[in-house]
Image (cartoon, rainbow, N blue to C red; front, side, top):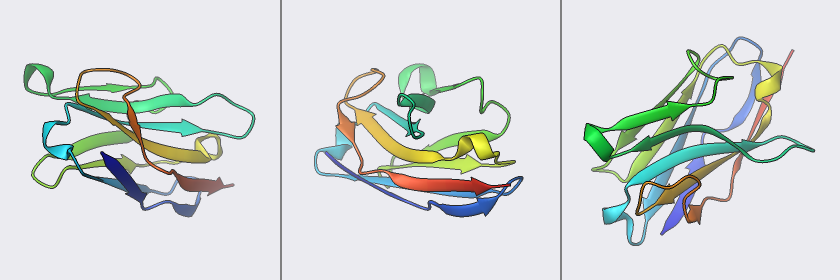
Length: 119
């Protein structure tokens, strides 16, 4: 499975960005898709995830709840991350992640896309 992210960039605090990730290869059986991020000097952390269990279950880190929304389009093998009310602390490289099972983190990673929030 190959994952390709897009949509990162520079935005002012309070602004919005939408990240996209498209899976190819053996993408037909992907069960879990998620977004992680890694800021300089910090560990990679889960931002949001979406699995196909129970009709669709999402999870979010406490720091983004109410501001970020993850969504999937399985027909396109895609996952999105709508990020609103961005803060400078959201500055990081954002990575798409996927797996054929409900597992965090999953086996497959994208190359990452930079999100920079200026004050």
